[in-house]
Amino acid sequence: MPDQEPANLSPREAYDMLQADPKALLVDIRSSMEFLFVGHPVGAVHIPWMDEPDWTLNPRFTTEVRKLLLGGASGQHQGEGGAPVILICRSGKRSLEAGRVLLEDGLPRVFHVGEGFEGDLNDKHQRSSVGGWRYHGLPWEQC
Image (cartoon, rainbow, N blue to C red):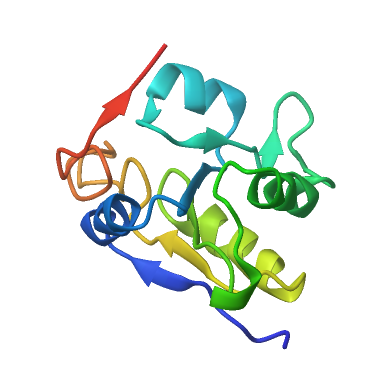
């Protein structure tokens, strides 16, 4: 099914899903530097979709997500269609692309945070003032 799209969630919907379903997995797919220095949602697992220094796609992305699902991080249940996987990036563009790949690779319940962690740019070319996980005051941390 090549035209499948991951379901779009607002940051609040994603947070509520994570609170309601302890098996739900939140995967931050941004680069290592973004994850560490910009911050990330509390409880997010980091699996970069593409990373520095070469900015090439992670060829093990689906495998790494599957390992978390099958390895116990989310307690994958086959009979229930699998644990939900929620992807988050900076503004929702990379997570949409990565979600499509996970669906193509057979993961059944894939979502993405359409506003991302930092949201879109405002008229001053700044993030975190128009939307995103941080803008909505949801729990986050940084190193």
